[in-house]
Length: 74
Image (cartoon, rainbow, N blue to C red):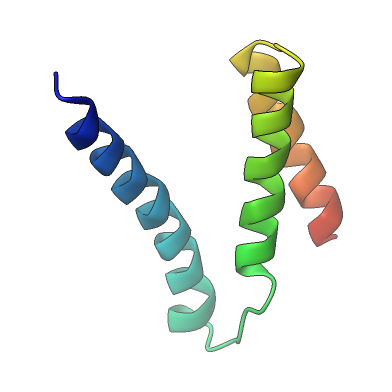
């Protein structure tokens, strides 16, 4: 029920998802990923703008953020 611990767990989980993706690219394939963090930032920025500023539902926000980050990645 403590909001600090909930925020801490959420932050750890978000960065662990980012780390697992980076581990696949760098660890298993041996490639250097310079755009990994920038695409993560683009997706989170788009999700934040759509959800908080435009008041879109989360089920619209998440696919839109994924598609926009994928478009920047392509």
